[in-house]
Image 1: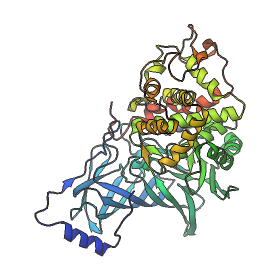
Image 2 (image 1 turned 90 degrees about the vertical axis):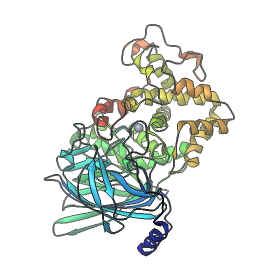
Image 3 (image 1 turned 120 degrees about the vertical axis):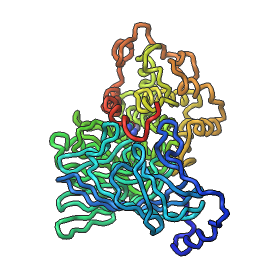
Image 4 (image 1 turned 135 degrees about the vertical axis):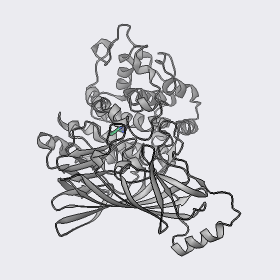
Length: 522
Ligand code: TRP
Ligand code: ZN
């Protein structure tokens, strides 16, 4: 997102006339990917989006989605052509008000050739009219659109946007969003931010949602179905929006007993991470068969399965932690995923400590002692896990041990300054693990190269005497098996199983969640 200097069409046309002399260097196509090694076709080159206006109509009975997306962008090079990431059928594309030619290319690229080339620095308005049945559009045998009995849900990482709106689908191009959805009366539509309006006419109701803070494309969500939507404000004045499918059945009470604590948990997390970065907060629980949750910005997606064994504040803490670590401060490249999952997991450890269910140190010791050297767990490098292991358990658990090792190395005082300082340092931006390390070194005054190398970038179990490992943590010789167990010789912290569920439920679905579009690198 970049501030636009000129908005009027007349000024735009003038800028174009002035900047396209006959002798200009040739205008070239924007690249079909933004340059992320894990997902070569994710995002696109040549422009920067500032705002998405997405206007939709959805019919739950047939899964028909019709849309008009208006995208405000700025060209970052002299462009003859550019791509959007999208999988639904396109009817018409306008660029700066003129009909453009377009073609679906590759797995999920919409290639757009404007009637006139676009000069570097000039504002670009793209209108895309489309329609399709998102549940039926598959890439690599997979649709990111979750159909439910009464509608559908778009909530996926790293890529799900292409099933409901065209975008520059990479976390480095953040934008504000307006999402307006027309659904049959009696059905509700949910997206990010605040519900700014709702109106009914002739059997259809329109819901208008607005996200006023920069948002990465994968953090935009859409849910349609029969929901009980509740609005409230925290004591501090932050609007809270929560929504529950009317079909939650036995999970309804536990879901509400967890998600209704959102405001309280945001306040608790603010004590560690600093001021909450967004203008609203909340979450929704649709009746989906999946087991995972996703940190969709301000409006968190939860699966009912997370609440099938009673209230689960741990998962709420995990997803809320992402609002600072992941959503406000986002990865620069998908390989930086530890900056999201390591810290969201560590927040669960702090919550466990608060609830007297095991300290962060005990949880770190338990992870360390549970997997013997040579176990596959240690072959995943949390700092660069590869696209196939982006959400492996080690990214979360070894990733959180790495954070405990950092804490043990720099001491509590510096550690908590780092934890709170980083989201302020990089608010609404992107960052790499290397930049986090430099920040932690600056705050603590300690060189941390060896610590990061050992804990994040080495495909082996760190030695018991390596930096940050508590002396008591040596693994007992006999520890074996896939899952940590009593065999590790350490008592299992009370919170352990519940915390594992936050992503373990998701892990067996991971192939499905990731084995699709955008040409995943192997
Ligand atoms: N970021 C999610 C979490 O840990 C996990 C996740 C990864 C996910 N890929 C997903 C969730 C796809 C839903 C869909 O909270
Ligand atoms: Zn997470």
